[in-house]
Amino acid sequence: MTGSTALGEYLRARRALVDPADVGLTTAGVRRTPGLRREEVATLAGISADYYLRLEQGRDRNPSTQVLEALARVLRLDAAATQYLLGLPAARPPARRRARRDTVPVGIRLLLDTLTLPAFVENRRFDVIAANRLASAVSPAIRVGGNRVRAVLLDDAERDLWVDWEEVAASMVASLRTSIGTDDDPATAQLVGELSLASETFRQHWARHDVRALGGGVIRMRHPQVGDLELRREKLPIPDTAGQLLAIYHAEPGSPSAQALALLGTLAAAPT
Image (cartoon, rainbow, N blue to C red):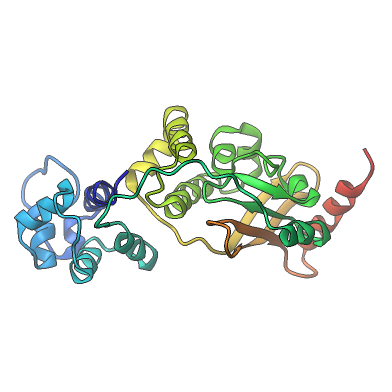
């Protein structure tokens, strides 16, 4: 997908989500389409309707930062979504990339084995490319070769783990869009195509073009062996790896979740 095509799709998706009343517009009668009209976006952003149309159609590939920031304000984008919007246009369409072979740095592999916390490495598509034993004990889907988005959306056992599954699914899809950007490599296209065919939830959230910052957060799980877990999730970028992230789960010291996580570690270390 070229940057210009991605920009047009993003603008169309986001203006459909803005209630005219939220930007000070009064409407009369029934609107045939949801959200803002093109000319309303253009007027509020201080640009011509013809120029805005060219942006949505991909006929202008080099809008200024000022124009994009004005559109971000009209579309009520948060900081993460604004940054994503600013990164979409491209004077030159990106070359189609070959699938990359992910190699986890040796030092990170050694670190995973020494950590007493659940930890794993994922690439830009959220494929798991390295994991320690405790991470796989938290979720069997956290294993080398697994994909975190596919598991959350398509694996019933994984779905049952999450207390707030709907929120987790929406966050996963938004984070995936943020992570891959306009990446056009075959593996990324295959993943998006597979999930689009297999999951209505994915289709709905993907069509919204939501994005979310790739950072930490709190996860809540119902683990079949140790019960409820409330864990912090940290995601740390690994330098010089084309987007790999080191993910670590940890609990508040002394909390019931910390005790449950320690028990799970004991169970995971026991010989089978």
